[in-house]
Length: 161
Image 1: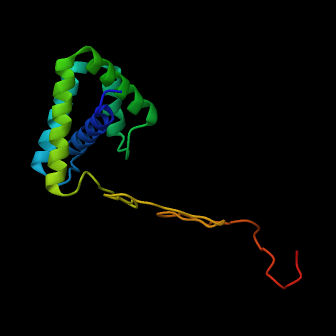
Image 2: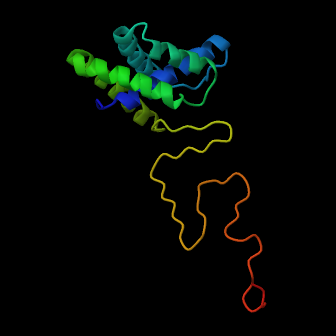
Image 3: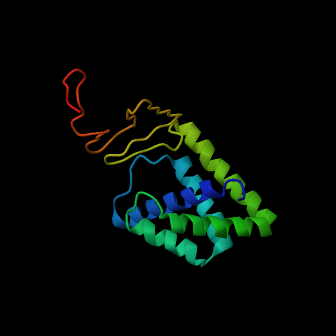
């Protein structure tokens, strides 16, 4: 896969979500101008190359559905379309890489690194290591009950078992 394609897919979706929210009158008032301009550039580079590609149309459709992320199928579809175009057109590949790097630089300048969460989400801007051993459970968050082993395990010395 061409370097940056997966990142570009994410930016194209973020751009489409942003535009869908503008149309619906629900745009975030605090979107940094440099970040927005960078996402506009990624979208422009991609849409000029892919034009009416059905994958790009599907991205816009899913963005209008107010999804938190693209479906796996659409993400893969757009990534394959972008990868194929980048392999066949070095000029497009270079423009896409430059546009992605512009958005990444804007994210770093804003300090968020592109990390955000809404609703009941969790956003992490660095490395997270979660480790469990010895029959235990470890997680960033668990929504609901967790049962390990038997529901009422015998206690030592009770003679049950």
